[in-house]
Length: 196
Image 1 (cartoon, rainbow, N blue to C red):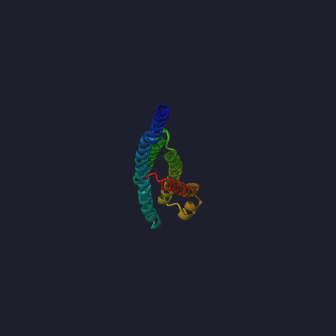
Image 2 (image 1 turned 135 degrees about the vertical axis):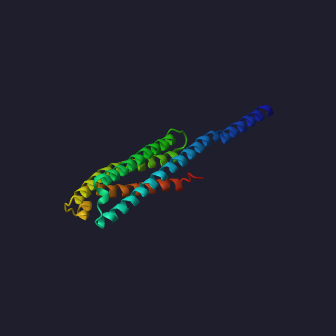
Image 3 (image 1 turned 90 degrees about the horizontal axis):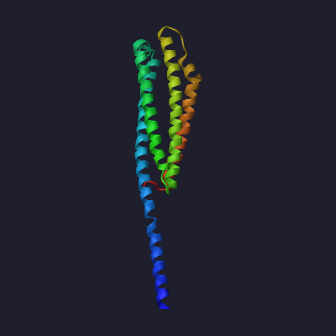
């Protein structure tokens, strides 16, 4: 009678050990998800830096325009400036594609729903950034054309142009959506302790 009891106890202990240590495989995916998240977050930080540099350049140019210096906006200088902005936006777009792919790798893993929730929210943030690039490209065309006309002597109310611009309004709306979605993603990361 003792043998069956001992055998049952040994079997139960073995099962308990398996249950306790069997979850270790999930840690592999957790570690992988954490690594993917860090890599994707670094890429997104580079996108934010790119936007900041573009905004700084835009502010500098707006200051010149407000002072009546339109030389940078017409002729060869205007063409070069437009190309510079378009190249910067294309670079941001490519970086966003890379960032989205990095977050998408997290969604391919099993057993990491918290990381997947964060990755999905960041993919939403990336999508909003892509929309903002399209709006910025449209706005650049609109502003470049206006500055070229001003450089040729046409009177254009710059403030009215900007305040009435659909591209400008769209960019403002998208910036708000990006900030809100990014805050949600940051909250998920913090609340679920994804960096620990």
